[in-house]
Amino acid sequence: MIWNIKDSGDPFEKECYTLIVNKIKNYNVFWSSYVGNINGKPAGIEGISKEFDTKRLLIAQWNYTLLRNLFTTEILINRNAKKQVKNQLNLINQEIDFLLATHLLFNTVEIVDKINSHIEIMPIKQNFEAFVEFRNHLTHNIKPLTKIINKYFHVPSNFDWFEDLNIKTNESWIWSEFDFSNLKFQRVSSYFQWCYQNSLDLFNQTLDHEIFYFSNKLKNKKIVDFTPIIRIDSNKLKPSSGVTEQ
Image (tube, rainbow, N blue to C red; front, side):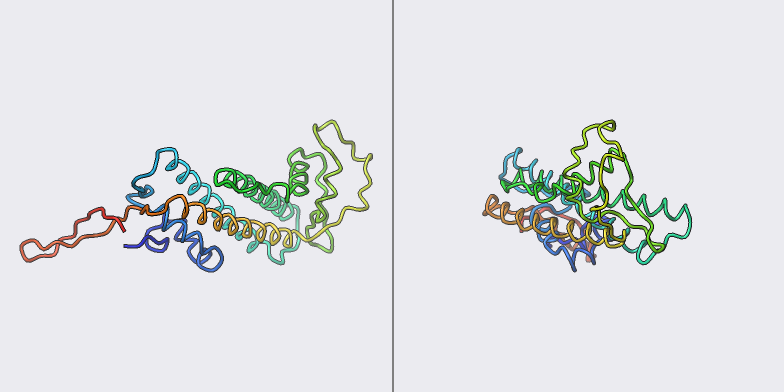
């Protein structure tokens, strides 16, 4: 048996199978080569240290979280496509989704940085400094800075505007002290797409780096394979199982 998500992934990974096949194919490549699934737990790889095995499992878990982040952002896109603001409850729901999408991308950036530090790749957070400052502003919740324009919920688009604010505490910024005229806005649906594309790109780049790293570190090592064995007993076929190497 060759490990694959479709047959042996957990229920969530199977739910994401179409997403994986169409957009993040190397998730299955990494999973089948270095993770597997035996009775709900990752398969072993013989002849590696406990320290390296811990790294393997940690990165596999982070990949799983990145997959969940991407899948959740996809849900946000689908349920907010072309949605107008019709009432206060609708506005609140869209703002909640906006905050969730921001958290998911920020979490993805953080996780990718952690993975890169383990596989000896330069961190990428500096490429998202403007977004991180924007996210910090939302976390401190000093001023929402969202708008309804032509019945659509809009959020900031030029995140570099937030880099100059230098917000450290809730008391360090008074609304009237800043000129908001240079702050630009976009529909929240466009923001979701932006978050999704960045998450997808980061995930695919990270998987490429992971596969390159592990393929070099685990040369001549094989993941344990859990292959059904058919035995003949009293003229009847009875399934049993055994553990073999690929």
